[in-house]
Image (cartoon, rainbow, N blue to C red; front, side, top):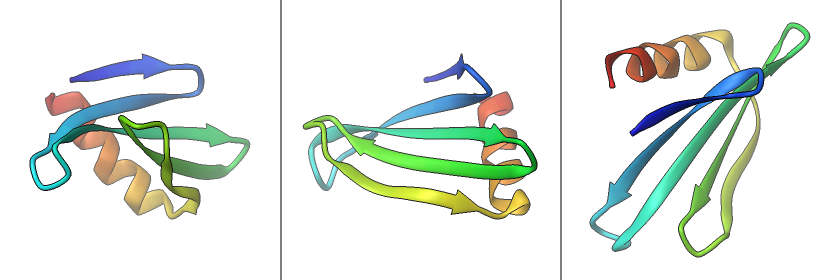
Amino acid sequence: MAKPKENGFIIETYDEEKDMRVQFNYWTCGRYFYSSTELEDGTTARKGRISEKEYMDALEIYHNA
């Protein structure tokens, strides 16, 4: 599932290996791109600045969802 969020978008999927939903958050702030990965149990697996290419690749997935 994909949905918009302020200054970005969210992609949700199910990780069979971990047996839980995973939420990928992408957003922009100024000229920088950021992402975070949150597991269903509330833990943040990764958060930080990403490259424009990583953001654009995720945006393509978002638009195709």
